[in-house]
Length: 220
Image 1 (cartoon, rainbow, N blue to C red):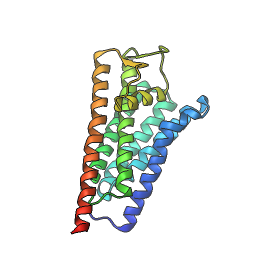
Image 2: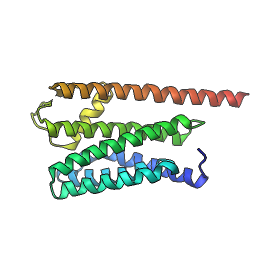
Image 3: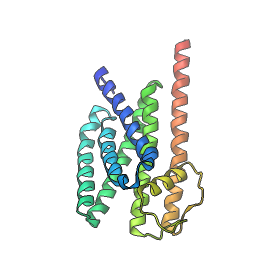
Image 4: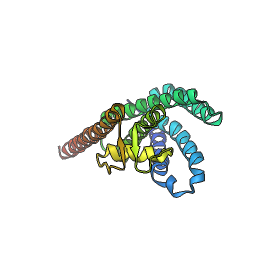
């Protein structure tokens, strides 16, 4: 797929901003006062929705922007009016949206001819978005069955409890302070850990292969 220099620059900027938003959401929000966490999470998630779309090529951007708008509207309406059913629908839409974005980013990485800064940024962003997708699945599970996960303090209503559990599971670290208690929670935990390891293995293999091919072509 041929992209103009302007389109490539736009995608690169979107990737940088997306990395900044996801990094802030995952690592920096807990440093702010707890009373500000809810609004910060909402604003950052909203930004991630739209920035993720602009990391895609032109052909997919038009299709995904509609899903991003739907996800954005349903998320805010469900939160403002405290509509539980709409919150379920919003969460499902969000999972579907992030799944499509991750798949498209992996395809873009696979189609790239060389390893450059843009490809590395796409790889990192796709990993973060994969984690956020599983975070939403964990949150849905907790809403459906509050006893599906066991917490040391016997409660977890914060988004960052779910983010923490997801990324610790993806890395197969598992401190043991949050544990799945029912069959669905255990199955989801297995899916998260396997997906995280498969992603790293596949992406690293692709990047190393492209890098090696680039060096070989330069020598010849």
